[in-house]
Image 1 (cartoon, rainbow, N blue to C red):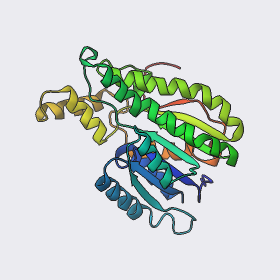
Image 2 (image 1 turned 90 degrees about the vertical axis):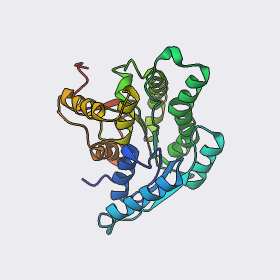
Image 3 (image 1 turned 60 degrees about the horizontal axis):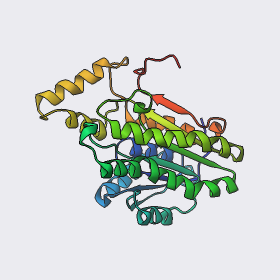
Length: 267
């Protein structure tokens, strides 16, 4: 399927590894000019090179397809300025952020909550605020937030993530109904367990050691999923690319699970 986005410009926050990197890869394959942002220059440089290596054959006959990177922190005003200076008029915006380590809410203080809100709610909302009007004026925009299945299945040990990500989802529910008339959609992807660094970090945050116990928990989580496996980041990247396509203009304000069937509800 031709997704109709070759030559478009995309700004992907939190895209130096894992699910974000898979999203950047999927867009670059479609001929999109991709700018990836995160905090660590070395990781970004390696991710950009990996993307260039993987897509070289895919974009030979398409316009666009370039990959650039910017090291910046989305939780700060200076960081957001730097990110938007690198890609000032994106047609596509991805908001993606690692969640805090598992913990007990009794141990968290105000600073912990503010940090979580800055990373997973307020930073993404600011990026939306600063890009959505331009998208509406140009009559094309696709905004996708990678959140978590925890907004539908709250994880007891992930209270910071449960709260902050749910705030972003609630905000998007309102604004996405206002932007779609201008061909600007805003949706949320809710991943379950994926074979990623973030998943490994999550498990290590729940256990006391990283030896045999880690392997036990890692395999047990896969066995408990109806698909009996972890998701491949490329699967989420492909879903993301379709949501960014010219074919997806009638999809907005949706919270889309990609979890191998682990959510038990009918609706």
